[in-house]
Amino acid sequence: MSRQASELVPMENKKIKFFVCGPTVYDFSHLGHAKTYTQFDFIVKYLRWSGFDVNYLQNITDIDDKIIQRAAERNIDWRSLADEFEKIYVDDMLSLHNTAVTKYARATDYINSIVSQVQRMLDKGLAYRVADGSIYFEIAKFGDYGKLSGRTELQEHDAVSRIDSDDQKKGWNDFCLWKAFKEGEPSWDTPLGKGRPGWHIEDTAITETEFGPQYDIHGGAIDLIFPHHEAEIAQMESVSGKAPLVRYWMHTGFLNINSQKMSKSLGNFKTIRDILKTYDYRILRYFFIINQYRLAMDFSDAGLEQAKNSLTRIDEFIFNKVDANYDDSGDEAAVEEAKAKFHEALSNDFNTPQAFAVLFDFIRSQNIKEISGRRTFEFLSQINSFMDFMKFDQAKSDAFIEPLIIERNDARTKKDFAKSDQIRDRLLSMGVKIYDTKEGTKYRMQNFESGIKKVQ
Image (cartoon, rainbow, N blue to C red; front, side, top):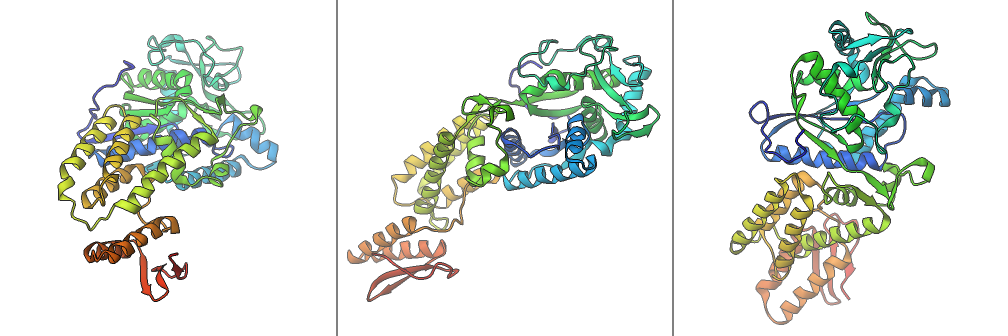
């Protein structure tokens, strides 16, 4: 609420209850989803690496006006459509290696919890019915409305499609908790009457069921602050009498496409599946993680190529310089200093740009040396355990292998057999078998898939 970074102190020892607003499953997952959920995936994995026990909950909005409309357009059942795109979303997350979620919670699995919350709001006089039976939350009854965003009026990037229009509402920004039954729409028979839930109510019903009335961290994209997150606060704090709803709010910045807002009307709407046809998931993870999660970022081919080149620098360093079997005790101080600076940056609101500056400075200093060993390997492996874009078992290309073989042959010519054997053993540890023949040095991968190649 302070809009300032503060020390993370969970409500219960080292246990963190972490909720992030999930997708409405009516269409293919897009790059905005990729940015937000990859950044939160990294954050949760880093918290776990840091010793926190994180219960990471994400909702799936599987009943909504958009789902009903799209199903009608395709002339299929709304449930079938929601199931189809939920599976696509989860598959896309797995393709990006976003695996930190503890539980995906479907809104329709919490109808009883939703009904319970709405009924309690009615009982407390916080909500009211209109003529058709729909139920609205009365903003005027919650004096703290707007305390998260610092406002009560709409702005350009707000989720305006989720402001319910109804000329029977008492206040213009009162929002719907329960939508009365309409012919042809899905509905549930409940003590509230026949109908279906509004959008805002599903999140607080899910989190109250799974976490209780208060929890540690709530995340989502920045456009959800108003009105969605303000509505969540109003619902849960008014009905429970406990504040705050959450201790810490985390919002990811906007994703633009070539400096423009992504939208189908502009023709720049890009799905995760489309991009993964051109770029490896590692490049996308690197691209999203290297940008601090709160900041807006621009998605462009030039930006992705820059990310690809930076990732190649890391790959080349791992392949050409890092040998996990080499004793690098002399590098201990340098590695420990880099580790400390790297984690200091991440402990400051996950400042990944600063952390990567430390990483590349370290790589630059290590590249001057002939070889980096076990401590460097462990440092990089540690980073990869929560960032997951490095590749330690990469298929070795000729461009990587042949310079090492040439270096080995040069050492043999100079009768530096210790160095020659060291390079041979290093190649072997990487899965590259070399053969010294009358025709010259040849090599092949130990899986024998690439055949024997001769070094020219």
